[in-house]
Length: 379
Image (cartoon, rainbow, N blue to C red; front, side, top):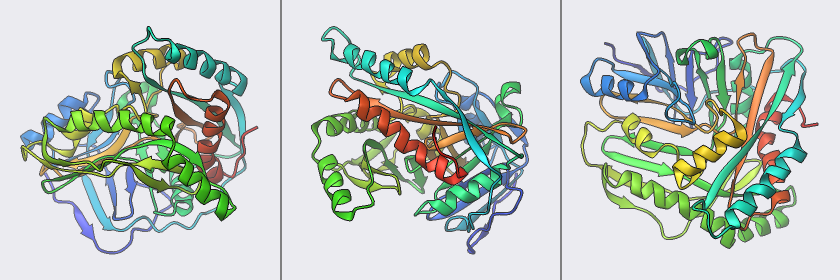
């Protein structure tokens, strides 16, 4: 048992990052050492409630039935503000393959839209993703990629999580990213969420950029897609929280690459023993990264994409006093143990009204966050 060290100074990124780093505008959490590991997220949450673990950190996979990468660390530090990053140089990194190729993903999109348009289907939304495999000419450290991601994010968002706790298939691998989406945060008895769904690309021309944002905010297709997410978040929070406050309409949230529809949600936890990890497990996966209905969408994703691993899962931390924060693991990539291979992911929510060409273009835009950090371009 231990108490985390807290520092009011902005955290600087060392050449060798901790096994867990979550950089956020308000604070940076680092954790190292493994007193115990958990592939079963429910057991990790139970350890917090029993007090046998003071903190749990790590990553949840997209499929809740798959092994998690969670552990009770031996040291934790929490610093005010995001990481101080300098955007250090990386070795040359190139895109080797698209998985699947763009033409195949386009055909998947067309087939899926036809399925969603069928009046006989129960599916209302499915999030379909693709990946890019990149290769570095020399080994790259997760700390280097995290540094570049944080430097390129206007709010200092970024994360790096050692996935080894998930078992031999993930030994030495790291999940790195700069997600803009808060799955759930608990501070005291206050619970906050900020689901994102519905996107549009940013533009250099400020007039066109504002017009695009206004169009997104008034788009029936994107508003419908967003409503699926908000409805499920409400349903997931209701058993665990009271005084749930949800705005009637979403607002605009931006990253350097995209506009998003977002809804800031607040609530008060009913039972103090419900930790941030309990809340995350109740909410994950949301329609923002899976679909509606959840089980049917998840089954179709597995059929079309195979195992997503930790893409579209969640990364975060929780303490035995209930506090913590979990982020949806998007705008992310999996770094191989040797530091030479990088698998980046991007997806988009598909409904019957979706345009397949626009959806393909959206994934290309979303890849931009990782590709810009790596200094690579999609071929």
